[in-house]
Amino acid sequence: MKIGLFFGSFNPFHIGHKVIGSYLTQFTDLNQLWFVVSPQNPLKEKSSLLDQNHRYQIMVRELEKEKNLLVSNIEFSLPNPSYTIDTLTHLQEKNPNDIFVLIMGSDNLQNLHKWKNYKQILDNYEIYVYPRNNYETLQSHKNITVIKDVPKMEISASFIRDAIKMGKDVSSLIPRRAWEYIDEMNFYK
Image (cartoon, rainbow, N blue to C red; front, side, top):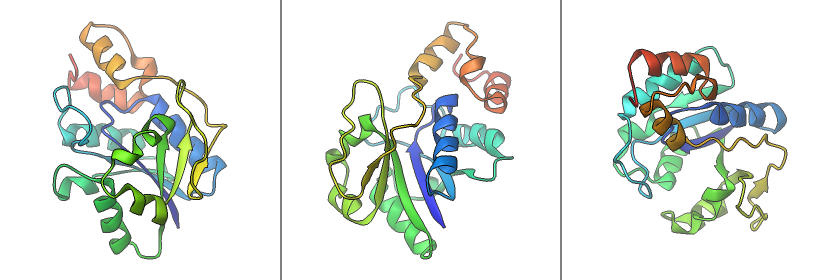
């Protein structure tokens, strides 16, 4: 099986994430896409990060009826901070018959050189890149594929968090079940 791995803090999970995941499972050769919830991205601040278990549960609730979109908490059991290469190695050992493909926006691709063992990632894994505004999306390696037709949705999780804090209704930016859970638990207020 060919599985896309979309890593992120998903703080919170929003429609942009779901649209990208759905598109990639329908219009590429991926059989499934796993949203891998990262406890702590080593390149990001932790200050406004909702607890990892809550972020995971928001996504479980939203994706429970999806057959091609799954959520993974695999990094919760790995050492912190979580490094993509360690997660990939762990997943490949547990699933030797599956092919894993990294999913990232062109903004993340520009920072790939800062990742732990990034050359090993580039040499051993395919990377599907979706375009982001104001970021170069040139294919610069044989294992990088730019998926140009992915719908562009410039939705920022930090904008959503700030809007919720200000009492704004952002329910249209978050998938229904995820929003119900966030609202019910009073997250980001």
